[in-house]
Amino acid sequence: MGDTGYGIDPKVVDDLATQIKAVVDDGVQLAVTVGGGNIFRGMAGSAKGMDRSQADNIGMLATCMNALALQDAFERTGIPTRVMSAIEMRQVAEPYIRRRAIRHLEKGRVVIFAAGTGNPYFTTDTTAALRALEIDAECLMKATKVDGVYDCDPVKNPDAKRYESITYLDVLSKELHVMDSTATSLCMDNHLPMYVFDLTVPGNISRVLKGENVGTIVS
Image 1 (tube, helix red, strand yellow):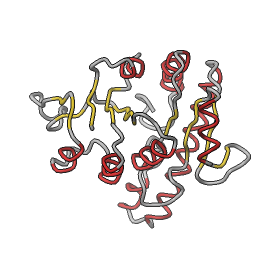
Image 2: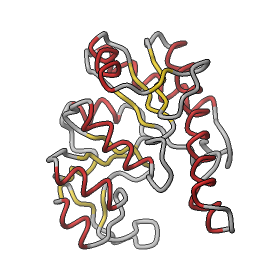
Image 3: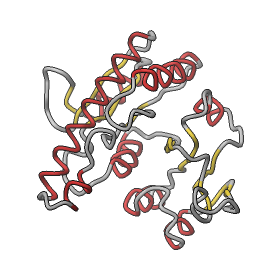
Image 4: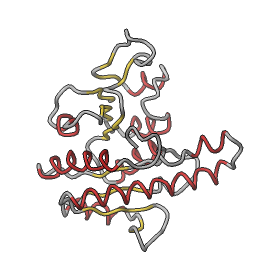
């Protein structure tokens, strides 16, 4: 949503497409799991009295709107893209099928995973971890507005220390909220490294893949 406060900022989407094209042109197979918090957050709706399952269903549909916006920007940039949804909506997206997703990646297409897991009570973080494991990804990249994992909130504490690397157990025991505990545990149990970095810095996706120190690795 950029600085607009709500919805989709076309400039942010276009900038992201430019970054991802550079990665795809280098021959990297890349899948994207997108959330919907810029439009609707299920937990926020639930906190205000809405039924949690219904609120999460609305949130999952919001991710589909973001996925289609990303697909449009990617394809205008020349990136072949497929949106795969965990909730069937065949007119606008393919249903999620693991083997088909892997085949798309093998053909050089970027796959955008939408609608979460298709189930309430599971976050986008958990979806990202699950899909990464299903497609046998080498790394799960958590793109945020912060340049890594800190020992405390860097916005509130200017002396906060950034970790270059940290273990899953430390993330869980110190409640660092890198990703939700379900996603972190899933990665830990299956030895999937997570890389947390700042998406707002142009070129950071490529820098992460080249091994530059621009974030925090959780392993």
